[in-house]
Length: 65
Image (cartoon, rainbow, N blue to C red; front, side):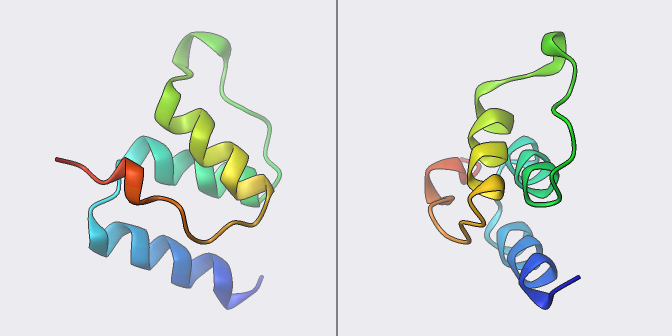
């Protein structure tokens, strides 16, 4: 596995990104199947989509307030 995965997760955690987004991003990046439908939420789905695209930025909208 590349260091991009670890560096991106670390950066998101240090910036205080919503854990649901981080979890979604990690699952998308690793091409894991999505959660079951009743556990999906907006943050998870956005992270999943960005992870599938290997997008390592654009998570500022998901910073916890």
